[in-house]
Amino acid sequence: MHLYDRVIQKANQDEEFRARLLSNPKRTLQQEYGINLLVSHELCVHSETDALTHLVLPPKSKFSVAEKEAARVGATSLEFLKETMYDPAPPKRDAVTEISSIKLTSQSPQELVGLGQSCIQRGLEFLDSALDDNGAWYCIRFNLGDSNIPRHYERPPFISAFCALALQASDNPLAKKIIRKTTQYLVETIEYPGLWRYYRHLPLDLDSSSLGSLMLGSHPWICFGRNRVRMLANRDEQGRFMTWLLDEGEPDVVSQFRIEADPVVNANIIAYLGDCDATRPAQNWLRQLIEENIVEGTSKWYPDEVSIYYAVSKAIERVQPALYQLKPTIADRLLNLRDVQRDFGNIFCTARAVSTLYNIGWLSRIDLTKEFLRLIETQQADGSWPEVLAFGDQSRKFGIVGRIGHGSDTVTTAFCIEALERLTGCVG
Image (cartoon, rainbow, N blue to C red; front, side):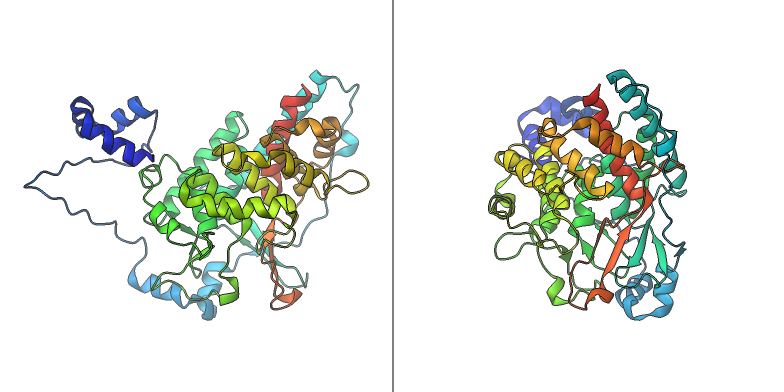
């Protein structure tokens, strides 16, 4: 039973609870359910009677009619695109690591733990300096087919939620500070009833919205599941969740071939909505993909199989018993992705593979020290890890030139910190 239904049920059965809820709702919810709602958000509880009905209006849109119309047709307006997306980024820099500066006198647990904590701290200091004044993370948009096409910074809410969720693995005070700043940015960009979009000229989407909801559980709209109805309505005939929310009046720029179910997006939604009847068809689809070993090429937005296994492992971690029985299969599939050197690929894939194995309890299947040292040795002089492709449009509908990629040193760094936190806790 969802929290909202539990609160209503208890209020109908317990007069003392009902009185406290009406008098001081935030304190009552904290006392009864351990929920700490956003300090900046007020909560009012009303009681209807046979002679009194409350008509509650939704909040006014954050955007004016003119702004919404500009966004609706923004994809065809060079002026709008320049205003909202033009933010030139420098060429991709060569990775300059500090391998030569790492001097291990031994590989004792104490030394490895100290080294890991030092690298985590440096990575967090880099991230803290990279966030803008609003708490937004940056990513870089680039063309996968032509490196001469200009690169641009972007700061959609998705990136901030995507990366900050990885930092939840850390108890470091600086990580918690970054998460607080990110949370405020997500509050500023949320749209009623608890949804987000990637760009202003794109429709709302369930990938941004599920990750944003996982980050912002303290927001009453999320806490009381106000966005659940809209999410559950966005399923195909097989019960899988589709990525885009194509409402009337929203930007109509999504081609029909892009209106599809993505396994990573579905795993993220399951992580938020939980193990319930409504998510069972999506769970069954993911289970089929993994058990039949047909994961490759099924994601439209994520470039590797590791991303799918990572997302499913996060869903398992958050909402057991959903997909729980897939743990050994995911471990086998993931380990079989390694090359002849027993590497998982680039450092971003390595970090997410490590975290996946941790999430499903199979981290002992790999050489922990080897993966630990690889993460340590690829950290750059400024505390970051190198930019790699993190996600992007994998469709070849328009050929390689039409494929846009996204990634940045900030994105890679967030997930390397997550993996190092997991490994540091094990090598010690």
